[in-house]
Length: 322
Image: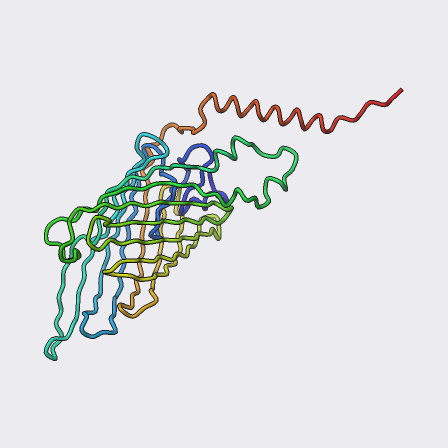
């Protein structure tokens, strides 16, 4: 389905029965994953280029400038609830530091991150709403805020980090292969979408990383949306709080472009980034896989008929007494 003619799906999809949507739904330009999949037989590419700098107040630690090539390849596999994701960043970095009064430059490039994983939708609150059906006699009851609106869709993610060879982005003793897991939630509130990712990364390593990503998106016009995102890292190697923001524009049903930036709240290092990106969908989806099967649909129809009969009885006037 579409948000406001086509947009709210610009960032993250809203579904009622099937997860496939008429317009592309991209994880860009934020860092969080949405709870919903792209749909069966949909192949999606999400890429971007970013430039940024890390500046340390401690002169003994080198400052770094870096160009990032970010990529995600997503594919809807077997069922609407499941997708596989290859997600990563190839970085080219340059460090400057002082040694003996001389400025020394060190350049290197490799995979800063590269993770192959799968995401599965565990719970979709829209199914409960479909089964209950709308209030046939009250527009206000269907459109006012309800406590059930706070119940999010929930997905689980599991992946494996893959970085091989002598990679300068690996700290000493870090393995080339390590696990990653996340719980993903998503609330859809009209023109607003709120996503939470709770992440445990490299959990078998000596220095695991735990992170939380909280993303709020909002559609401004039919093809334009904005987002704000807060991310926190907790690790003995690197801890930080980062704020991101950006804009995305839907070119057509299968193409989105975006621009975004970030900064953090400390000076060890002080960080900033700015980037642009594009998301493109190859849509091979042929048939929606409805979550409600035939038996559930028949049960839903009977419940709706029963509600209509009860409502009609409420409007019957008593007969005049003789």
